Image 1 (cartoon, rainbow, N blue to C red):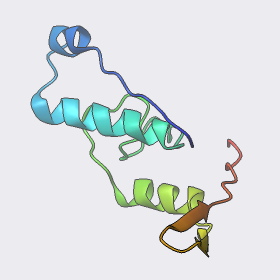
Image 2: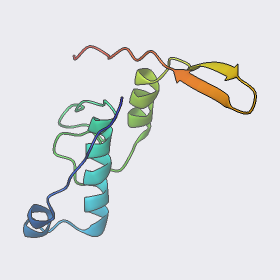
Image 3: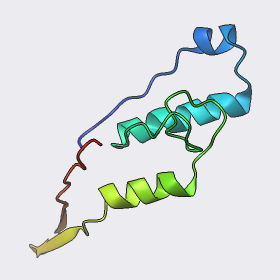
Length: 98
């Protein structure tokens, strides 16, 4: 992943009466998408519930992140005198949609 951006529509959140905690839940949901999580089932108790406004990050969401990012990083170090370069490589394999 090189970069990602998440924007929330404050006007819509205000118009629909989202509380501060509900706004945080929506932000967590959208960040989940930015990190590669898809929606869970509509009746799920999960931050990735498609109509989420009530749930923060749950154990199932953490398991989803662990499943996506379970490949350990590979490090290489090059020492050229005064400068040490550390390169991190990680192979990310997307999960298939169910």
